[in-house]
Amino acid sequence: MLKINDRGKYYRRLRIIKRIVSHLFLILVVIFAVFPIYYVLLTSLSPLQNLAQVSLKTLIPNPAYLTTSNYRTIIYNYPFLLWLKNTLIYSSSATLIGLLLAITSGLALSRFNIPLKRIILYMMLILSLFPFVIMVIPFYFMFAQLNLLNSYYGLIMAYSGGAVIFSSWLIKNYVDLIPKDYEEAAQLDGYTRTGALFRVLVPIARPVIIFALVISFMGPYTDYALAGQILTSPSMYTMAIGLYYVSQGTVSMNYGTYSAFSILMGIPIFLLFFAFQRYLVSGFSISMYK
Amino acid sequence: MSGKQKTENKAIVYLIPVLAVLAFLDFYPISYSIYMSFTNFNEFHFFNYSFIGIKNYINIIKSGFLWQLLEQNAIYAFGSVALMAPAGFIIAMVMNQKGLRGKSFYRTAILFPWAYPAFITILIWQGMLDYHFGIINEFLESIRLKPVYWLGTPETAMFSIIFVNLWLSFPYYTYVFTSALQSIPSELYEAAEMDGYGVFGKIRRIILPMMSRQIAFVVIFGFIFTWNNFYIPFLLTGGGPGYSTQILITWSYMEAFDYLQFGIAAAYAVISILFLLVVVIIANHYSKMMSILY
Image 1 (tube, each protein chain N blue to C red):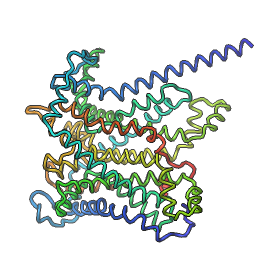
Image 2: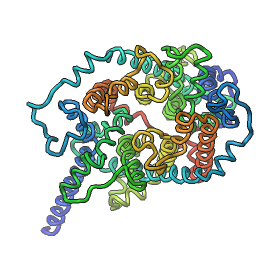
Image 3: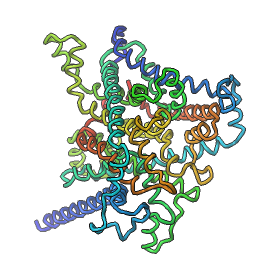
Image 4: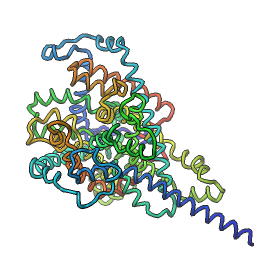
């Protein structure tokens, strides 16, 4: 009897040690993840103009020395709100268009026996190997001919294709896991096949659609390579270009403004990620049983 | 989903919008790039460039620089994936222990690197890795270690790039593996515990076999993405010191926008894609990961 009790204690102790080690490990991971962002936040609030001036000693700052002057510079001296508006117009329109295309093609690739399906899927894979950067030059000439340089339409169009392939795949894989009974039941209730697909499967596939939305939004929101070539007038700038423009000091890079700008630029995308956090886990699923 | 069903020709209608967009936004520009790689398109022949066959490719191969670029690109991509995927897997395993408190706190906190625009955080890392003023060297000095030229020598610069890539990517891998771990039925774990398997037994007997195809898919796509991931070498080291951290796609960008050699730039990009295609075909041969796509 005593012996069994001892073993129970031993296992309980082992479990407690395992828990403590796990928490320590995860806390280290969190510090690793958060530290650079904290560092920028601190720089943005400090009156000094140099990223390097934040040292080990000032990591826990004295509130008396913190200032919002960098933020005020950005809001009052630059058209920040205009750039924010531009970026949101480009990114959300492109995301919406891309997502509609991806939902249609994802559902069709999952549910219909489309001719040449395998070839289409392979072709999409090959196209996805090409990096976005090599399209900058062709896009530039295409848009110059179509008179779409420096316009909302041109950039929205270019971005809307960006994540279509990846999103289509994600949606197709997710819908593959949904039993066909759902849409068959809806068809018995009098829906057409198309109606049944869209009205029944889209709500069920919401996690993956939101996952695709977050991923697609991120691309145009942070793009610099393409926007930098296609947009020329400051009134059309996105935040990414604005950030570059603002942080060019007279002598060297102005880290104070840079940090404050990057904190402001991070907030919207942050809110998006946190609002949809639970879908980031449930949305990405690949069938295991095929 | 199986091949035995009758093909539905009308259903192609659903794909027409997406195929049209891909033709216009992917297929045409890509074909244009490939064509450019066979021309002498550069600053001197901006409006009257002509077809020169495979001359660009011959020059590239003769220059010998290609092999260096391929080697560096391979180290960058393999090194990154070899760190990121296991890191994501281990963190996901630790974070998903049954009954561990604070799961959602940890999961939210590690979102930061993923949810922050990468080109901003890469420049922040550049500041933190600075030899004279960077906080990392300051920390090393405070524990009486020698400061390191993180971005100043070829080896440490490549290491820094891979390390920053780890920081940027581990949340994504943690989330993906979390999702995969949660889709394994809990009865399997319980059965394994009854049989007396420990953590490693469970990993070897249940998790790895159940997740093998997902792992293959995630690793191969991680490799493709990293191979082409231009921002980290471009912003962190600018390809330096010397050319020691250039990869094919950053070099292609430099040829185009610094030297205005558009034809040669396109040829480098095409070589990069061809290499990637070979890797994907070989990987698919061994892992059958493409079957996930059907």
